[in-house]
Length: 380
Image (tube, rainbow, N blue to C red; front, side):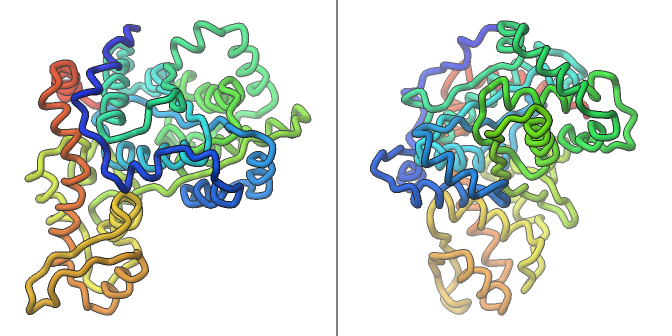
């Protein structure tokens, strides 16, 4: 696959905001506690904290791994949250391996199994992350295409997959189907049954110390730890699972690329973002399972370190919240109304997305990538 297109003119990409930049610079003077606190701030769950402490004590540059199926336009959970998390990992001294799982997307029948389309989407993913401010300078972030890496080291990869297959029964593998966006009740192809064993093998193939994926990938990461028990391997991969951002509508536990009402895409125009946030589920006085508040907690505060609500003087005037708890307390008490919160949220998201829009508007290669991606029909 031609990967030249991944390196579009970086000079045209605006720099990230100062607050984002501050978490993307690795400082060798950071103490172990500071590095640990940064890593734990990423994870909704850490398995196991004591192992993470030991890793940081004994390895200067732990290898973190995350994988993505290129399967459609990128939403802000994949885009903005990934930039935030990767920059934090780098600031804690880690090396990030981002696994562009093109073969996995083909196995999972994304884009109708058309590998060429899947690879175009993979290039588009990388273009977005760079435009959004991911710290890719200095070699601490490595983008790896599964098809290329597996083909080049097939003699290492496939025996590992076969050993994982041999040591697990079918029901155990089927319990991992959630990682593909499937359930064990779905009618699965042979390739989809193979998928969890391949993803488990990825952890060892990439020599990952930390699996930094979403909570929806937890089961296969646990499978990797169980495999270590089977082969009597002492050093198990640490699981650092990040929060899953919900969809914008009521009851949507996970943002979906196939449902435009559920997602804000990384190149959505300002008016589209404003409309989607305006229509988003945001009940007054309710903090739990409120998608608008979750976006503020997991995107706006990590990016800007504050959230400013603009409102008329008779409604209390402008207020800059310095912590999520302060904002949640005001919202639950009724001091902050959805009618004021939503426009301010949309404005903050638009500030984050503007460099991405500019890049896809002004860079010819990026513009063509986006045109092609938008022309593809998404398949489940």
